[in-house]
Length: 188
Image (tube, rainbow, N blue to C red; front, side, top):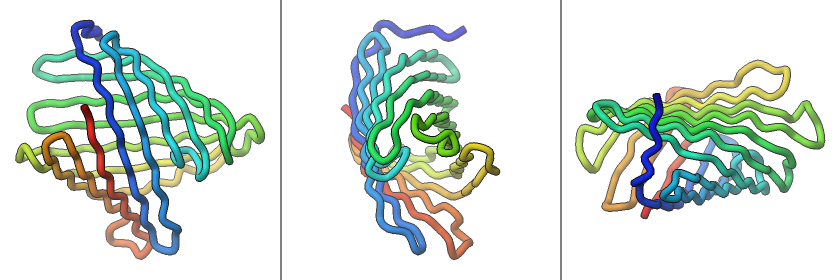
């Protein structure tokens, strides 16, 4: 049974992801998030669901700590800009010693055209052998309404400098259509 930790502290952060791909334009994707002491979670995104599109999410974080730390955050959101609609999302994290799994899932509905509805998943499995370094594998999957899943698989490495994390992802590393994502993230 999930327990909500009411004694938790508030925390905020910014994630800045930079996307580079073969034959694709550079994309900057910032994400701001805040979690209050009572577990209420808010998130602001830009260029996440679509280019020149912003989104606002609100949800609640539930966390259980012990031998295995587990966190789940269900959210609802509004999307506006080049893409307009609503979204239901879920972030989940599991940590065991130096190993962690993180997954973000969302289903987004277009108010303009049902054919633009989509499901998106980003999952990571990593190990942190040093306090300043982690590495692992990652996948991102997208399914637009009534189409097949499009999956990309990759490797990741992250570097931690105090409260700054620099994750680096290489999707399709053995393919000429490789994509690189570099983040500079901070939490306080």
